[in-house]
Every structure is written in structure tokens, then in C-alpha cells.
Image 1 (cartoon, rainbow, N blue to C red):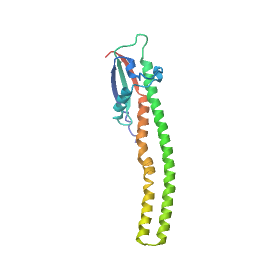
Image 2: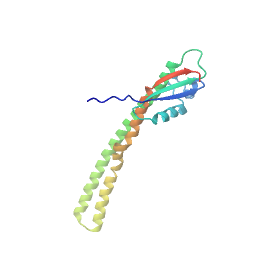
Image 3: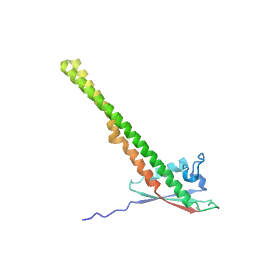
Image 4: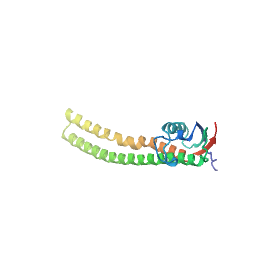
Amino acid sequence: MTKSAHPAPIHRLALRIHEIAQLFNSMDPTPFLNKDLDSEAEDFIETWASGFAPGSRFHITIHIEQWPSDSDPSEMLTGAIHNHFSYKAERARSALKHFLQQGRLSLAIGIVFVTLCLIAADAIGNLGTNTGATIARESLTIVGWVAMWRPLQTFLYDWWPLQRQIRLYQKLGSAHVQIIQGK
């Protein structure tokens, strides 16, 4: 028995701009293919796309009122949008790699610390069963395990949003982009 393949849903975004320059960061002097998108345009696209299931595909249609007289900007704008989000995906991958490296270091430190706390708690437990020794033993045990909270949180929960963001940028970096003249 075979499973039927469900195609990924396609979601469409239509942007209307007066001129091409509205899409790009005016403070960035690089050519269009390497320019940063305008932060408001980028935030709008990301916020829109983040509202859909991870397996979704995206089609972005850009309506330009003032069509450039010298050439068709379709290829340039498609490349610029793909390059921008592919670059953001690469930066997010790098951030995740750094985050996990830091998590591994924290985990190693946490393991050493909890081991020392448990050894000290065991040594105190061997000294006697008076109230002070019991409090010290239990306190060391609790402190040792609390020190493990952050490294465990890193590997159990904190990396998911970064991975989700990478997937979103990858999807936007390969989105179908269509450029249309007029409103």
C-alpha cells in the first residue's frame, strides 16, 4: 500500500511598490543583487511567511508602478530576493552552529559541576546524619542539578526556533518571484 503524496501548499503574497528602490535598503551602496532588502519589506515578507506551515511554498508577486525604462527588472529582483534570504539562512545556520557549540561547552561545564556537587554531597552524607549535614547534602544536590538546567534547555528546546528560522529563510530564498508592471 502506498501513501499518496500531498503537494506542499502554495501561499501567495502580492507587494505593490511605486519604484524598485522601495524594496532595498537606501543606506546600502552595493549593487541590487547584493543589496539588503528594506527592513520594513523584509519584516513584512518574513512575518507573512512565518504564519504558514513549515512545508509551504511561497510565490511572491511584485507589482511595480514605475517600470524602469532601460530593462526588465524581473531577473534582477528575483535574484536579489533569493540572494537576500539565502544569505540570511546562511547567517542563521552560522548562529545555530555557534549556539550549539556554546551549548556543548555549557553542558561539559555543567556535568563537571554536578559531578563535583554530588561527590561533595556524598562526602557530607558520610560525615553524619545531623540536620546541618542533611541540609548541606541536599543543597549541593539541588544546586548541582539546577546548574544543568540551562545546558539541557539549550539542547531540548532553544535550538528549535533557530532551525525553524533557517527553514523559513531557505523557503523564501527559493520562492517563486514574479514581477508585474503596473498596479
